[in-house]
Amino acid sequence: MSLGRSSMVISLPKNWMQLNELKKGDVVSYAIQRDRSLVVYPCAEKKVTPKELTLRIGENEDETLITQKIIGPFLNGYSGVTLISDKIFSIPQRKAIRNIAGRLYMRIMESNSQGVYLQTLTDESKASLEQAIQRMHLISHSMCEDAFMSLKNRDVALAKAVFSLDDDVDHFCFFLLRLLRNAAQDAALANELRIDPLDCMDHQTLVYRIEHTADYATDIARHIIMLDASQQKIPDDVMELMFTAGTEAVDLYVKAVNAFFSKDVPFSVEIMKKQHRIEKLDQEIASKAFTGKQKNAELVCAICSIRDNIKRIADCAANIAEIAVNRAFKVAT
Image 1 (cartoon, helix red, strand yellow):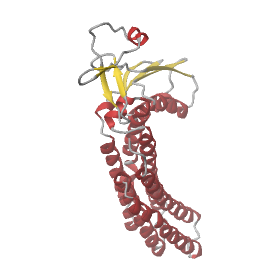
Image 2 (image 1 turned 45 degrees about the vertical axis):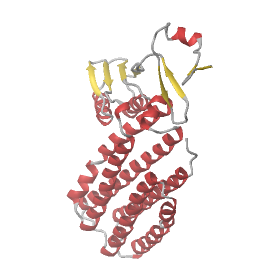
Image 3 (image 1 turned 180 degrees about the vertical axis):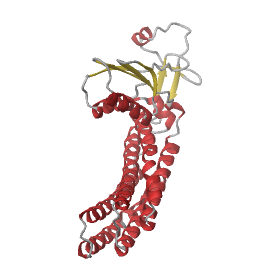
Image 4 (image 1 turned 90 degrees about the horizontal axis):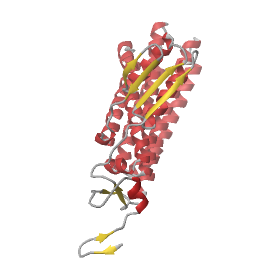
């Protein structure tokens, strides 16, 4: 390193120059990272080479395994995935490939009896992390509110609408997990998103909790639909307690997500304390459900499942609030 009047001159390693085929007069660029370090790129713009992967699919391979084989490369930043069958794809296998491609927003660019090429056209560098999370949260919040309104009003049409929104949350979940995993490995992308590796971990946990909350709302809606189909009815006193507990759990969840971004410690601690209120209501629901007149096994199982989902939503809220507290005391970089 040598000093100039207004700058410092740094010598670049010769091996690095040769590796990137640089010569005298070539332009390099640099980016300042959030930890104040510099990243040097061998050209004015960093060239991104799309990652491609080829996977072989067995003749009788299970559809679930095929689905997971596609999800894994997507989350790890692969832009294209080629699937090659040992013989020909069965109809269930093709259906599984189409379904997961749709959920991941991947396009089927090429397809024949023995091969399928999937490609994602997502540009992570243009993504807004907080905006995407907030949109995912808004859908999840709406699902929760509608699930409990359908419970209170025995509105099956509304319950079916809630059930149909679960795929939208999954779309955001897969996209955000891919984005965060890439940012954890790519310093330039992390810098553009204004996050560091620890932020990636916290945001990934938040995304999972939002996705789980949507799943719990979906399961509540599923039980409402099933009870209507079997002409079973939750007693009014039990239903009122469930509605109260559910709306309070959802309120805690919404406040917890807000606390995550505001890093409000006292507010987060209050959210964690209020979880005990949900536990008390849960005990009241159990007492009325198991001592009441209803003896139908399907009805009792549905009540137990809805109770459990309400508790899990409150648990997600407490977990998000705990992360918010931890984030507030993170050492600034």
